[in-house]
Image 1 (cartoon, one colour):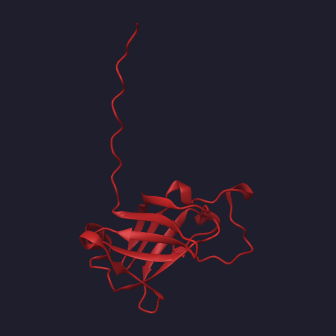
Image 2: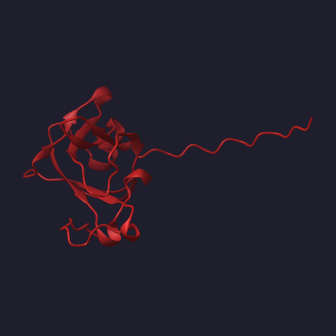
Image 3: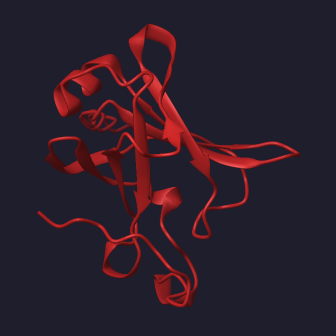
Length: 145
């Protein structure tokens, strides 16, 4: 018999404290963004429960990115969750798979007051059409900073 030493485990990736999951029911498909208590303080400087926000989905060169923008006039509102985290749910968009997905961490790639830009989990990136979404469908513009 021949044995060799197993490799060292990879270093755990640091979590941003922001995750994305997808929930599918018979009546709806929805996407949920959850922000931990520490991430609320780190990125927004406040608790988010009860705060209105827009979730902006990138298109074109910004595919695979999303933004969370605090906006008093937005239709969606963060709700309180376990351990002082907060979540906001939005509708399913075209680039997403059609089955439920567990929570996966999003990488924060830019931050401004009341606005963060996220790199979405790999399962949320578009597929087909050369990796690009249908350009004829209107998309939100990602704010460059």
